[in-house]
Length: 188
Image (cartoon, rainbow, N blue to C red; front, side, top):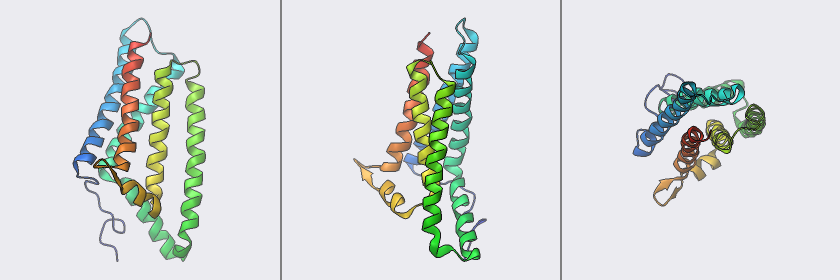
């Protein structure tokens, strides 16, 4: 029985914990760091190469979108739509096959994204390459979370030194992006 706008999902704050809000703040900091890098390079005599600029613009857009998604929990709406479709179409018992195919597809998308970003950033300084690694890791993490595999969700819900594994992965990737944007501003 569904009670939300889509199945059991309703629009609202997805993770009202301190870790959730810290992650949202890191998304905002990552977006601001990308924007600041782009803006600072407009003001100097050493602009970013065009292809590298596209990489940083894509990361800026992704950080804004993922930051909004973090607290609105839109991937849960997507998961609920999948569950509803599986139930109505009679393949709910076989949903693990679909989930595994989805994760395999995400791996392909992630690798394709990595190759595309590396192509655009070919010859870029190391901070841009590190930012790409952080962004791709973050994208894969978010997509796997969207797949909502029970065993993966259990693993990510565990804690290490009082911090949930999913916080460590997501926050860690965001810190790589923030640090990389800051460092790229320093590199001529």
